[in-house]
Length: 248
Image (cartoon, rainbow, N blue to C red; front, side, top):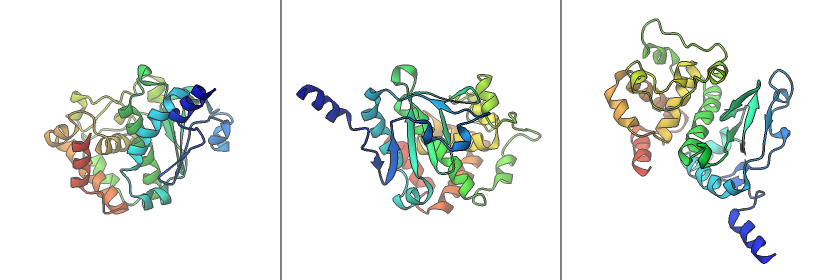
């Protein structure tokens, strides 16, 4: 009995769900999703994240949340919910977001849910919330000008179709970077393109800043997104984000 108690203590209590004032939950119930997601056609479904992942996940999400001022978090974010897997429209999702919450899948490192993956997913999804809350802070017309003339984002389902077709890789693609896109998933929609840059300025993939300097179209998008974040809070400068890179 004593050993069991010690194990649970080291693991971290699922009820201990406040990090930087933000609710962080590891116990799944359908009620974590908005009511409109719980019925057709969305039909939200998920499973509990493995208990062995709680301690590691707490450390990762703490690092992610620490990159934002507390005042910003309090104003923009209500909760972060972790599950093993989740499905919407009968399609598996690694992450998604609602009006003020982020939802992230984590089935363990062996299944590809590394610390980098989890943190990038958080920044990716949180950036969508910020975009909705501050629609005038990002010059989307200039963003589109950074693409090749005539380019049109190719997924009318805003990323769902790309996931369904297995065209949603988030690995940096050196062929696409020449065209102004970081990953395959960036091609699916304007929002996903922005999200993918956001996840990399907060939690850079290897060579992200070298790629930014090498490819003018990527550099334009990065500067536009840094301006967006700086308008939300002046702490977010190019120097701030490059220091995050040095700390990784």
